[in-house]
Image (cartoon, rainbow, N blue to C red; front, side, top):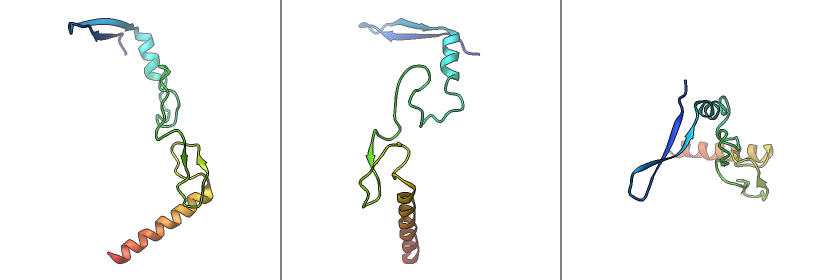
Length: 101
């Protein structure tokens, strides 16, 4: 059960003054609106209307020869081909580190 919420803000003297009251039904709606969703992928957080992005707006593909812009904030490569190239390179570097150490 979710109770109603009072939002308080200090005035010039430092005393708390109530500026907003959220009813129990609104608090419940805000709480349950993002249930069972990926918080890092959605573009809206709850029903507050606050937009956010996990990593950045747009970035360039991580491969050296690729100049494509990556649209998905969770990915560092632009395509499956670039992803496989990157994985192969990382695997090779890892093997070289193991042989040296």
